[in-house]
Length: 263
Image (cartoon, rainbow, N blue to C red):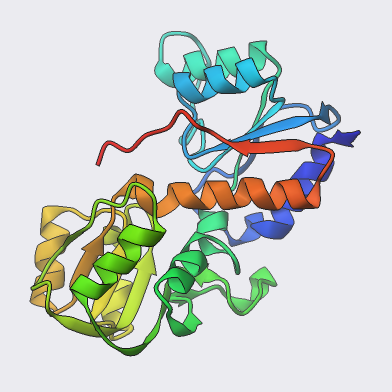
């Protein structure tokens, strides 16, 4: 049997918690480290649907990308959506773990996977972590790199649509615009647009950005490529389930089948 602590050790090797952003709420958020684990469900977000799926499948652990709770809560009651979900998970003895920005930032995490999917070379973090984190040199906030040749936004759209499920591609600038130096920040990456501008990128791939962030990108002659928040991250939870299956073959790990994209 494999207890929860062994799974947590593996998750910390895949996505070291020390590399999460300082504002994030990562790690074991509910659960007993000594409990034996036989089934794991990975998902982007804990919702009624994903929690129902975990209960029905007999999973003792949910690995969710988005933390629950995300911000500190003074009480856990059924008066809030977060409280209801946490109470149900605890009632069914389901542990909850979130790697969130540690999985975004890690050496083989979401941003690194996106970089590989579009063929970036000489990839490095947009904002490297300081040496005192004892983190690998390839870890840090976001990624950027160089495409082998100048590539049109239209060509990148074709690549992303084929490689990322649920991709809902949107972009600033002309579809015929050619780019080569590309920054990547999954999820709500528009908030980190300044990092891509500072790195001299001529395009930035992200999940979503606001109207005003698009205007800022346009003003700096940087093309924003947006695939949808869900699409930019959900594929990596499938990859995480596969990695857990390989590393713990005695534990049944699978990705949720009951999540969908809103945009």
